[in-house]
Length: 183
Image (cartoon, rainbow, N blue to C red; front, side, top):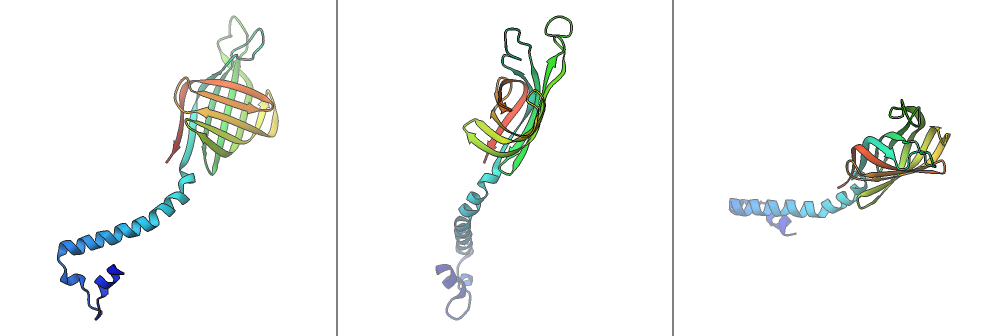
């Protein structure tokens, strides 16, 4: 009301013209601030889910390897990205051709490949839980299988836990980075 009265006056003439330049500037800034405050929070809260980003890539080692008394180490190449709109998940597990001796340090045998889409993301501090469906070859093979990947933000030493085909893999990041951002 005050702004309308200052601008239009009684005779339709502008009253701002009679005020000094500093007062006109102050009234204009006040009007802009009031407009920004009245529309800003609604827009920010409506888009807050769209600002969630979870991504990572790197090499991991599976804790305990293949398991059992004669465990063989298993390395993975992992990459994923997700937002509240979805994302993609890739994990290739490689094992050595020989458990010991010559070749046991070369990870060249495709033990398992998981490729899928992420349908939802939940945050818990520095951890994100990714849910989706994937196609799996090798160990636990199948199509459109549900999976859960729990990822911890950070570099080497961060963890990834993949649950798929009734199996759970606890992985430790050796190289790479996992980023979780929400703004």
